[in-house]
Length: 154
Image (cartoon, rainbow, N blue to C red; front, side, top):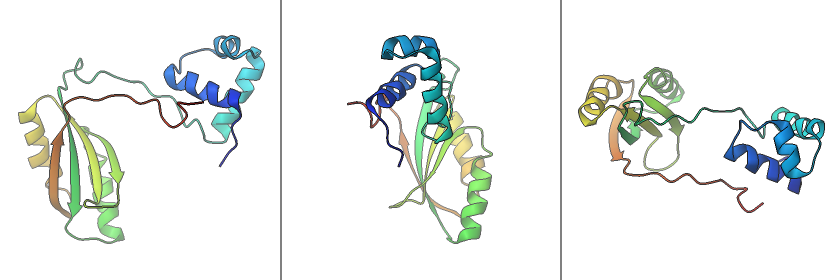
C-alpha cells in the first residue's frame, strides 16, 4: 500500500470528480504550484493509484436504454473453462464489465442493450452459447447512484 498524505487524497478526490482539470487549476485549489501538482499526479500514475482516465458516456442517450447485471455460474470449472469463458465473453460488445466473483455465481456481467428484446437476443445468441455457461440470473438496473469512493472523507 502506498501512503497518501492529505494533499494526495484531495488531489485524487478532485481528479475523481473531474479528471479534465489541469495541473495548474488543481494546484491553485490545493495551494501548490503547477509543477508540484504535476509531479504528484505523475507519482500517483507511476505507483498505480491512478490507473487511467475514462470517458463517462450516457448509455441511454446513445440508444442503450437497458442495463442488466447477469450472475453466471459455469457448468464446468477449471483453468481452461475459466479462460475460455473470459476470452469469449470480453468479445461481446454489449458486455461492459466482466467480474470474476466469489459466491453464488462465478462471474458478474454488466450488459447494455437497446431494449429488453435486444437484451434477449444478446442473452440467447451470445451469452448462453458461451463455453461452460451453466446457470444465469438476470437483474435489470432500475436506477444508479454514483458514489465518490473510499477517499470521500479525506
